[in-house]
Image (tube, rainbow, N blue to C red):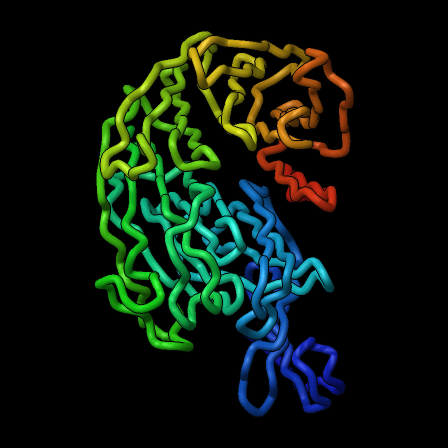
Length: 381
């Protein structure tokens, strides 16, 4: 890096001291305090291909750390970094630790944790308030292409990890190694849980790694690599989609008690090519899927029947996301289009054409109504 002293305190860190501007080889500008070398702000110059994105919304409590706003957007790109944007001022922080491209992201209910899945065969958990890695999930034998939190909580995060935000009860990951894994989050509980906690202020750059979380269960999910994963809001079901053209539904809990091992409940067939994406409706009575066969399908979680098939994309469907409490369904594809479908009306009610390349990512936060998409040209809307 090269840098020279700057004038004002426009780096977002307060104060009027001198600043250093560092220029990195991946097109980022780092604004640092010239005395302490503390990072004040990161300006991202190039997003590359956006692989996934998630809104991170803090509910209750303070931000717990420098730069941790109430609403942030985590963005995975064609790199080993996760970029965390504060939507109040679009300031950016980098989540550093993966050794290869980040393929998938998820954020927990309450905004206390971000999960990232990578080609380096690991999942990492991040505190969005401090941008520190607070846990690692190691055990997959190949790239991890999907990760998902459940909607239920199992206590509060330990002090120093998002200031006591809700701890999700469920974390699953799925991989190119064909397996589905369930992870133990109890070491992150406030008041203990049997695991070590990382010293405050430790980062991957300092050489001190976050604790490794235990794998509670591993199941062989599909005959080919797993591309898609979603967990129902009530943590009772999970759904996976694969290159083998099928979706599988897994039972995670029964009679109100959590099961250690995901058990197969149903296999959903009907797509003619690889399944790239799956999502549950907020009330989890239905789920949706998108495939390389250019179709979007809606499935009943009561009798496993296909309820709707939407046609309109002219290339692979890469992401689906329910909107308006499940009344609408958004889909994006390799054709660069985002389409919005009415579940009840069984029709496309809007087509958004703002990207020049495939659209890998869609996310939304309601209320208020906010939406974001990320494309292969590195652009976001």
